[in-house]
Structure formats: structure tokens, C-alpha cells
Length: 161
Image (spheres, rainbow, N blue to C red):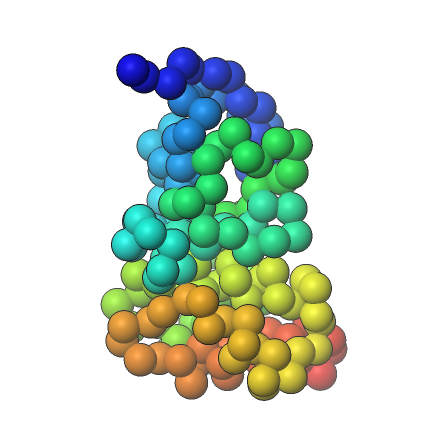
């Protein structure tokens, strides 16, 4: 038995979209397949790697686990909503400056988890950064560069850099 299709109004990166999907369709699939926003990656599909992290409201969420029906009226923000190739956002530029990406697979999820942290705690301690970022995995081992990038972005946003 299939789940019936429903229509969902989503605010993604400040733009309104209407999608038709089954209620249990993961938000990740809607973002990638329906809206062509491919920043968030399918990693494990079990919520264990963080490659699919996006923001829903003020929260970093694992979009592979979140059904589209659970978004409600909360805005969705993906890495594409932070900046462009020509004009990267502050956090994106910090990741570039610190060469925090090797293979790049985890980076969009890392950036979105860091964005949620910096929106909630503009000047986090190193321990807060480590704790908050612990849910996202980087198999290449660039965790120290990622930590430096988040710290750099925090300082720049605070006018210290």
C-alpha cells in the first residue's frame, strides 16, 4: 500500500516552493530531486553521518530522517542559501580559507551545522564548537581545519577579524 501524495508549501532559502510528495518522503529527497538543491548529500541514510544536514527553523536537522510532512511552516535553509560561488557567505569563505574540505562530501552538512551553532551562539567556545559539530563525520580527518573555520567565521561575524 502506498502513501497518498500531498502538496507541501515550503520556504527554502527564502523562496516559496510547492512540491507534491508522499508524507513520509525524506526532506533530503525533496530538496535534491524536486528542487534541484544538491548541496545536502545522501551519506548513510540512517542519520549517522551528517552529510545531509540542513536547517529547519533554527535547528540543524538530518534531512535524510526528516519527513517533508514534518517541516510545517518552518523555513528551510541549505548551503545554497548562504552564498554563491562568486560571493561565498562568511562561513563558506572561512571553510575555503582554512582548506577545510578534502573530498568535500561532508562539507555542506558541516557548514549547515556550524551555521545553526553560530546563529544560536555567535561566539562559541572551542568546546561548544566541538560538541555541536560532533554529530557530523568527516572521513578525511579535516576536523581541526573545520574547527578553525568555524572559529574564524565567528570572529569575522563579531568584527574581530
